[in-house]
Length: 196
Length: 215
Image 1 (spheres, each protein chain N blue to C red):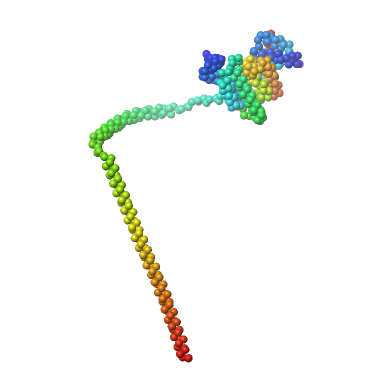
Image 2 (tube, helix red, strand yellow):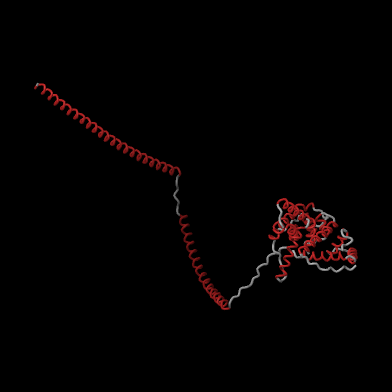
């Protein structure tokens, strides 16, 4: 079994540069994925991931193990994405439709052309709805839904209390529900009442 | 009908814990108790669960599918012909290889003979006594040769100059003679003109005298 993130960080801090390569290999896809969902651009996501690892490497000597390495890495990447989104807003307004048009095609694995089309439409609607959320809610939804971080990890990554993370997530999901219902695309299913 | 605890941040947090499977038993019990008596919240939880399923449809762009090799269908006769050609080629190759080896051996023997002869020639040249040259004599010989060459060049230049001078003198003399002849011709012409005029005057004077005598 490979070494844990913390062990690798420790090795890196002790001068074993190759340990950082292992960390990059382990986290690069996930960081790039998160950045892609934040920014909607594959190219920018790649840049952000590279930049995040570079920043992490430069600041690794000062990294204190109060939070997990992954949370710290997500924090760096999220900040980089925020900067880019801010710069983008000051430069020009990109319509979501334009974003949709230039986006990559989703990979479908289920058979059936009709189902594929429906799912593609739904995926587009989800993506569009996500981009209408306030930034702080979108970040939490993406980190929770797609990066599968725990509430504590998200709180560490965003430097906010856990309760704030949960509230933002709740509001974000509620907004998404309203938006998708309005588009007539959301599929609701009854949830069994949990046993006491 | 709305939930009476709408806007309760603690309940919202608990719902999120349950929805994402991070709730401990106490939280699960609290939420279950509330949902049991609140249709609005049950509906809401069902809807949020549906939103989670919808969110899962947005997947990241995956890697492009690689091209799967389909294989090449070859007719049997083509395969047989290819095998036959391969065998024929292998035989030819073996024969060719043997003849090539023989040719190489001959070539090597020839090269060795040539090398031996060259070695002998070099030895013979080295054995021959070499002439001893004195540098001072060599320099003196070179100096005398250079002086000879210089003298010959000066003489040639002087001869050429003499020839040119003689030619120029001849041309000048000829021109002078032509000019003198022209001057002489002009003088004689003038003399002639003058003589005729004098004769004409004399003739006129004779007429005048003759006329005066008649009177």
